[in-house]
Image (tube, rainbow, N blue to C red):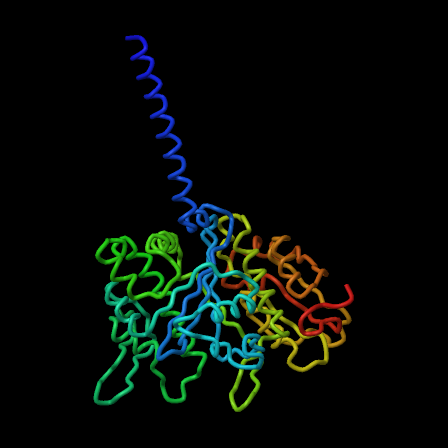
Length: 403
């Protein structure tokens, strides 16, 4: 009897051990087989490539960067007409020359090289499937400032105000062009649509997880994500405040090559890498919550005889996310050295601003905060920028030299 009880106890102990070991192995395997779980719980930025295409060519291409610990987001648009030496074909051409719906990796690799990052995930939407997804999530809300009437017989195509687009209207919204419309306006329109789509996808994510809906939804996407990974990622995206997200487009100088106008990134592509690097640094920086979404204002003054220097520098700083509120000439045009006047009262942010152009001469305007506190009548208070940048002869249009 004792031996039987002993054998039963040993068997029970072995069974418990096997259950514990099996459970542990299951958890480890499940965690490893779902890379998004590690990404969302870790200390790394998750980069996702989104492409909306029509007839085999990208309409819009975005890289969304998300940092889970701070829930901060940055989005960069990659213009299809971006010109560069395409290594794979060994010639200068548009970046979208590499795009292939069935083989996205070469296109993705070129974007990684351009931005200096690794892209973990990709989602490709054809225009037709975009419309189906918009219907699946019950439309996308867009604010239209001016009514759009493309065809007299059709009446107003898009009324002004907050408008909910169904699938068919969403497709038209992405591709319509107005006579003499500035290309920047059409780009901005598609950017706002993408952010609104992202917001609605996040809000409808629970609905999209339903087994029958999930299978249909997944069939509309070309992605390297499993349904579970996609659902987990969009759970995180649901926390994004898209109203505070500004999409930065990779800019450059326009030159004609082989009969086509190409945008060549500033400073041989080094500028956009610097912008991405600082953007990532800002995303991972742990700061006071009140400063998380603050956009700092800048006044740029030309203290040299170089025409247009302040304007070009302002464009540079806008790429880094600063709000340029004033451009002009300094009180003199023979400043030998570039310097910054800091009125923000935030030494670390002033240094970060100076690092963009390698300017270490930062002069604190101690009277700015005192004046603000003393003058309670804000209607009579003259607003000044957080930073005033005075450009001197040591500035080469990118960096301050000779520090």
